[in-house]
Image (cartoon, rainbow, N blue to C red; front, side):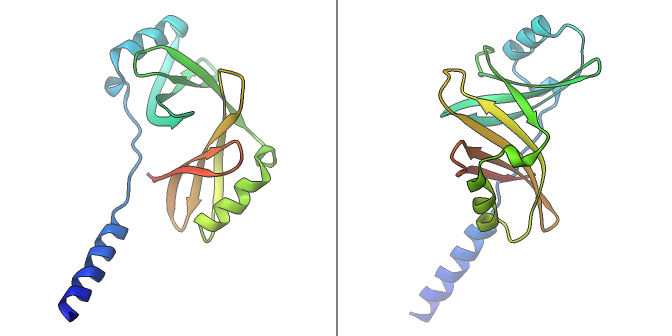
Length: 155
């Protein structure tokens, strides 16, 4: 019985210590169909980075584009079709009040470094992508329009 509990405790510890890590993709890692669409829309793009995301129940690529003096954020489906443009939020006060409550629950201390508004292209609702620093780690946090944390991934 004692061995069973020790094994159970070890298994719980091992599972809880596993962390999912987010990864920024290089231009070479972005699917060709998406790159073709990006170059059609932004022929003067200087820097391109991407990250795989899930918003509104769909797998997407968040594409960060530097074109001249502009920094753009666009979301594409894996098929290469444009999904929606994201909008960087300068004042974090525009976030739903529930976001702060849920972040306090998820992190003991935190600082929002960046917030991106992702509107639903069908017109109903919005979601947010946050870059959050907490305890020396940086997290990518996806939040629903109601402030609920959908996904939290450590970089």
